[in-house]
Image 1: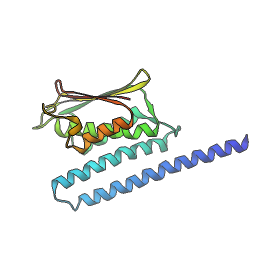
Image 2: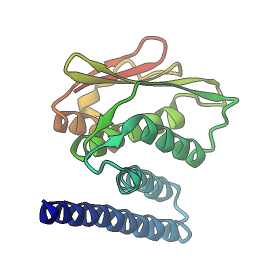
Image 3: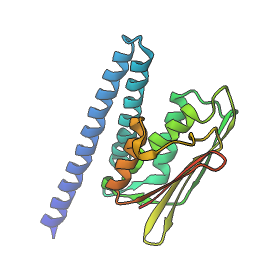
Image 4: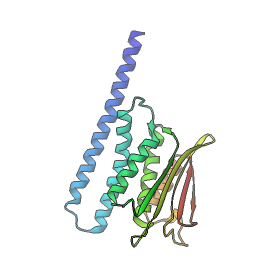
Length: 206
């Protein structure tokens, strides 16, 4: 029994160290991209590098949460989303007086295999809303909810902004971010529903 307890303790320490090292390596990559941004003048390149930083940060936050957690097998996803969205609002300098974030999150824990793709999906959808839904200093609400539904989970991200064009076809989107949302939804073995009433709504059930 003593040997078993010692073995479990060693595995716990090893897993925690792995998450710590992955977190640090992702932090190094983020820092390299930030340094690269200082030498880039083309706005399109700046945007691409910043979007890459956001995706890396979404994964960095997962490993940080696992490293700090008492339970290494899962992430408190509602707490994680709060940290991720704060980072995104800071990145895009979105004033809470202009774009208001409304969170409706039930207590949900996800293992790392689901937490990372789900975190990347949230990153893409919130980023898109902050960048495109409210042009010309328009104001509105970006809403994000997550809750258990039957044997699965339902994630909804919506805004009351300008909405998608009438001829928009999600599967043929030119945006890498929206293509990622579709690919990651399939990775989660989920279903994606996009609605265009009074803004844009994305619902993913997995």
